[in-house]
Image (cartoon, rainbow, N blue to C red):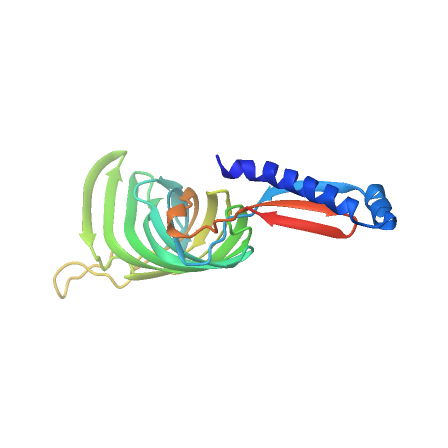
Length: 267
């Protein structure tokens, strides 16, 4: 409450100083001052983030897949997931309009396919990813674009099988060989005051075609002819993480202009 009184005190001080100066200047300077227009403006500087700071967020994901079975297009269904998609980012802003980030992302990615009219498969994997990206725009908290690449580590694979709409089989495996262990991707997006939209593409096949089951001599390769490339849109919110960076004490200003003369006071 106390700092809000500073502009009033500053105005009184400037008025008194102006009156005193007018009594001690020549008539030419006094005339020039009276003919000129005086403008006063108040403002607030954006938060300055000098050090590395941390943000975090939650998101929902709508995924699509370009799928083929033995070279022929295979029907698939868009998939939405909200649990468990969470990220922690380490940010470095080099200016108000440019920055970089990395961190950790936990995602639930996968696809839903229909190899036949009666069979439906739901296949997903939990991943832990390390992104590396750049930010361009008002990176202090306004609107900015971001883009970069990411490497995901596949942690847990889960598959459900449905026949005529009835679930007949399901299983999950940790660090499964059914998908690649490392899954690279590219991403780009837009964030406005914490709310973000990101599009991410995985150019690598979701399935490991060399995965086999069964004893030696009679092995089967369930994904030998299956190909799936993921692309998804993520909608989420990122928390600012104010407590992770220092804000300069003097963030407000008052500017007074008269002709070419300008006075700025920070408080």
